[in-house]
Image (cartoon, rainbow, N blue to C red):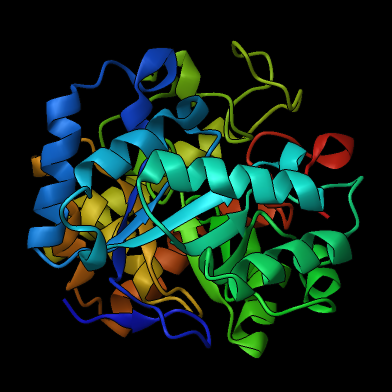
Length: 331
């Protein structure tokens, strides 16, 4: 698999990465066998996938511990990306959080250490100073951010360089294209899309909102009165499933599975370096791998863009999938 440079850093990462949130299981993701998790990681390394994204907040450290177990004898083959939680962004808290993550991961260093969500209480300067100190000490190799919006990005860059911004991005969620993606292109900051299959919508498995588990219907695509939703808006269910129908037709025309096309579409987009696709077993690793080498023609890319343009316009430029307006966590 052809590796790609992460921002301006020396890190080289596979175009398909492994998102390591889903392996925590539970009510949201469903039961997960630890043997499948370990096997998925080993399979990924065997086929050339080297980027694994986790966070201290995933399963209260469980995700990091499982990744550490899986990489015990193969640490040097992997690029580990982890994230420090919003509550731990004061300098002394970052240092302590990093040490805890290192212990759980069983590693002396983290390749990419990311701010999971920006704090509205701790100054960016203080957070960046602490990250730069960790970098100087060899605890982390590269600094990254996650969920930084159009205003937060330049504000953070005032105090130090970060090489990646992890963001929600998919055929059905194109909000970052309005303001954030152009900044990433200009600054050569890598975009690491998460939720690339949009809560399983782009697997092609669901044809109606009522078919989906309630945990997957909380985004702004769906009505605000659905269970556990917090956005309170009417949603865009008609537009979402119309876009899905159009995508399904395009995929049939080129004889490709929707899941592969959805991931490959992202890899053809500006500033996207690696797509963080969840994989809970060997079969899903091998499926995601296909997308890493799938070339889409300019015509197909244009058709896919057009098929989702109306939904993109109606959802607008706010990247928060779960809240908008005063409830949005982006700025």
